[in-house]
Length: 343
Image 1 (cartoon, rainbow, N blue to C red):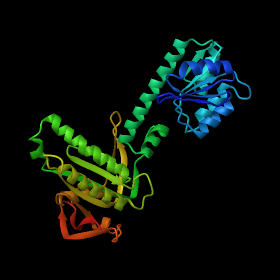
Image 2 (spheres, one colour):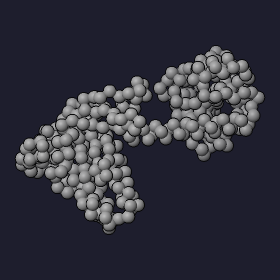
Image 3 (spheres, rainbow, N blue to C red):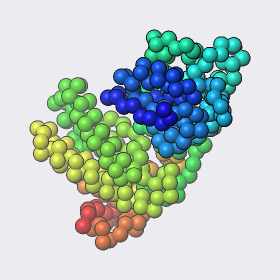
Image 4 (cartoon, one colour):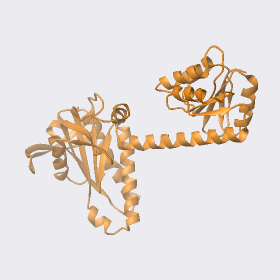
């Protein structure tokens, strides 16, 4: 018995590491009806399994093993970014507090003593798997609110220093006639409609490598080009904006409510930062953000308006343009604006 894989209908995968065939058999028999179970007879084999497939939800790890003991295996697991978050429960016949201290310092989450009590084993595994689910849900929520590079900075340093991004594009989208439509809907219906629209926009943002910054009532703000050296940020954001318009056309064809949006895009340098402490929010700011907002307010329903700066970053063979001429933007002077569509 060395490296076998027992599969059930549950999603959770448990890796059991013990040099005793008898212990592996006991634990496999106990767990195989509730979890996917992988087993390894040594720490070396366990690390090989994790290197090949780190998608393990929990590890049961014997301490007293030849060649490499459980403490050393746990330290290696916790030193790898791919496996650092996997909870490790030590299997041990030891019961001195110094052994537990050593295990926790190595990165262990809990201990199960031998001989195994089935109820204790299942209860502790269940507890740590539930905690792991909560951590994953928290991580997913965080990734909705913050870009990956901001999350990494907050985790590693506890703070995110403001950054200047020179190659970015900013989009503002506003739902036209929102006040009139909202007066015809119940609060529940209104929130349901906005949730459906903005969820679709979020899905489009992922497809086009765009970061949603925030929504304010019926307004949606997004950027492309932050957190990466993205030379296609203007095209990505224009395609995203055109996709937003296409989505509303499709939605209106199946609904009694006719939604329309107005979209404006501008490209240039912006500043990003995390605002607040107890209730922080990732935000972008700067003169070019304000210009993008003014472009949106001077556009027309179900069209994407862009500035000359954004147009200069687009390939003419991919897009076609309709000149609006020189348009006065409140507080920003006159600028050449264009409507853009795909060829």
